[in-house]
Image (cartoon, rainbow, N blue to C red; front, side, top):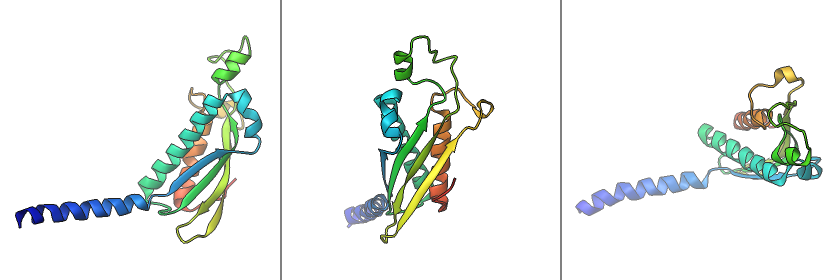
Length: 163
């Protein structure tokens, strides 16, 4: 009987955590639009890292906020601009400095959310610096990261289409 008293709460906790995991939204990120043509210039490695980064930011934000449970979030990176030259750009352009060169950057993302009940909702968000004065930080993808964070917060708040 003592074994049952120990195992029953453990089984209940395992069952509840399994059902919570099953409700987490699935995030899919692909490349589309003008970005398809820019992959070679930016470098496949950097674009792949940005896909991973967008996926990670959206997953983490939605999980933290408990939003869009059971949904499928399909995102398409359509435009991506670095604040500093990527490795590929520095390699392909002699004299280009990855330390001294700075630019306006950002990202544009489109897609859809398929809710747990099957409703399809469009997603659209873009954020780009409008001037060098707006560029904050020293990362290659500083403005793109800001776009990912704001998109994720918008998704968690139910604001799917903006800008």
